[in-house]
Length: 219
Image (cartoon, rainbow, N blue to C red; front, side):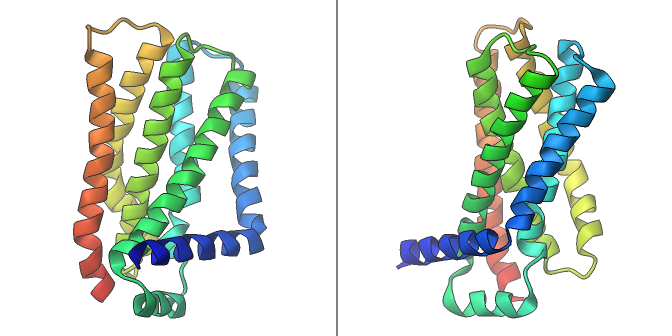
C-alpha cells in the first residue's frame, strides 16, 4: 500500500513538472549560465580554485532546485496530501524526486566544468562518486530544511538560518575529500573513510527527517 502511494506521489510530481516545464528549463539555464559566467570570469583556474568554484555552484543549484519542493506547495494541496498519504511516504517521494533532479544536475555541472573550465580532475571515477554522494547529500539536506520551513511564516529566512550552520561543515568536507581526485595525497584508507562519512551524513539526514517530519505533518 505504501509503495503504491509512493509511486503515485512521484508520478504526480513528475506530471506537474512536465506541465510546468519552465521550471526545469529555468534550472538548466541557471546552471549553464552560471558555469559559463565563471568561465568568462576565471578562465581555466588551478585545481584548488576549480574545486571550490564547483561546490559553490552546486550549493546555488541545489537551493534553486530543491527548496521550492515544500515551500512552493499551496496550502490546499498540502491538505489534500494529508488526507491520502502518510507523512513518511510523502517525505520519501519528495526526497527521491529531489535526489534524482540533483544527481542529473550534478553530472551536467561536472561535465560543463570539465569542458569549459578545463579538466583538472586526475581521477575521474573517484570524483564522479564524490559528486554523486555530495549531490545526494545536499538535496536530502535542503529537502528536510524546506519541509521544516514550509510550516513557518518566514520560510526563506528560516531556511537560511537553519541551513547555514548545517551546510558549511558538509561543504568543507566535500571540498576536502574532492582534493583526492585532483592528485592530493591522502593517508591510506582516508578517502574511503571520508566517502563513508559522506554516506553516513546522508543516512543521518534521512533518519532525522523521518523522525521530525511526522510531527510537522500534524501541525
